[in-house]
Amino acid sequence: MSRKLVAYFSASGVTAKVAENLSDALGADLFEIVPKVRYTKADLDWRDKTSRSTIEMNNPASRPEIESLRDNVADYDTIYVGFPIWWYVAPTIINTFLESYDLAGKTIIPFATSGGSGMGKTNEKLEPSCPGAMVKTGKVFSMNATRQELADWANQF
Image: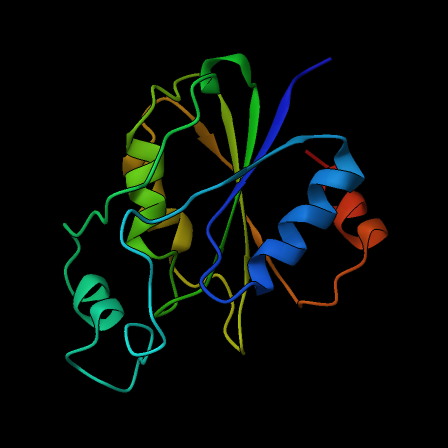
């Protein structure tokens, strides 16, 4: 049986709820991707061109630091990676997380929450951050996604 990890970044708690439900539904381990410098409400104001999130998302090389890394990622075969959709893709902290490990041979499955957009170019932007891994097409879930809905989706992989 393969070992599964649900790793997630949640700026407001919405993605955390979905990640926790997914982890419970799969019996998978759970890991929160915590930024070294936490995001404030002002940092997340996408309408402000000078906000931290806007600056990061406008710079493809941006890699916000992570507070701590998971020490046993090598033990997992499948990693579900969750995040809110920012500017139609994953926040660049997800690239930081992926680039922190050798993920060759692993299956990476993105999932997201969003106020209204789909996955956009998420896979295209994440694949270079995990060379040698198989990145599956992800899905956006509402904050009210049930464990059964998440399990039905996740068990197709």
